[in-house]
Each structure stands twice: as C-alpha cells, then as structure tokens.
Length: 165
Image (cartoon, rainbow, N blue to C red):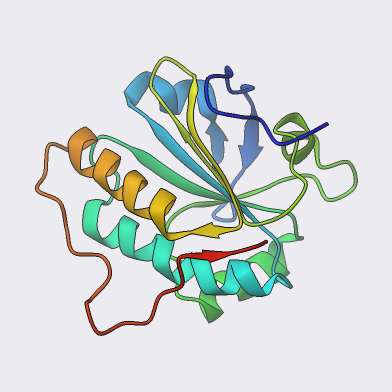
C-alpha cells in the first residue's frame, strides 16, 4: 500500500491523546479542516519538521483548523519527543503493536502530513519535509481561521526546501 494521495477520502479514526483525552477525526472535521502530522521519535526529519509545525500552531492555534500529531511511539517516548522539540499541539498515540491509523493512511515514511478538508477529503499529502507543502498548509490555516498570513520562516533562516523522511 502507498501513502494516501490528495483527492482520497481520509479514513476516520479515534485515538487516545497523551493528555488522556480521546480524539475523533469525525468530530474534529465537524468543526473544520484537520492537519495530521505522523511521526516517530527516532526520525531525524521529524525532529527537524516538528518545531516548524509548532510554528503553525503558535501562529494559528486551533482557530478554524485542528492540528494534531500522531505518534508511532509509546506514551512516555512521545511525551519526551514533544518536550525535547517544543511541541505543544495535541499528540495522539497510534497503537504500537499494529499501527492501525498509520496503516490506514498507507504510511511508508515519517514525517507524513495530511491536510484534510472539512468534507473529509485529503487535499495535501506530504511525505518527508516539504517547505512548499508547509507554506501551503500555513496559508490554508490562515484562511480557515480568517486570519492574515503569518511569517512562519524568517528571511535569514536556512530552512531546507525538502528532506526525505
């Protein structure tokens, strides 16, 4: 199976979050679009990308869109990753024995990020780090939140255009 592409209906799921709550994709989509960012703590590209995804969360919060991480690690390791890389947005825990959600989305590499429109269709499917996709998701977050676009990357920063996950 390959990673789900844009235009495909996103599989619905419910997963526990590190804070003890439960997250339902269906319930989140009832409120607006969702950005799902899958990761594994040992992945160097995830370590590179997640502080940048945190910038999206800080700029736009959950105004009009829900941003969640989906971890492929146990809770303690996931919490350590979030703390190490400054991740404050909600993080969900895929079952590490069978990875049902990761498999449903056809993950082959991490990070893999999906922008899911409110109608449940995947609009962006991004494997690895893609600056172009990151910027597109930032624009979508601004539109969804009815906010002006934020400058997420400063001119003097050296941020790669692409890193394979």
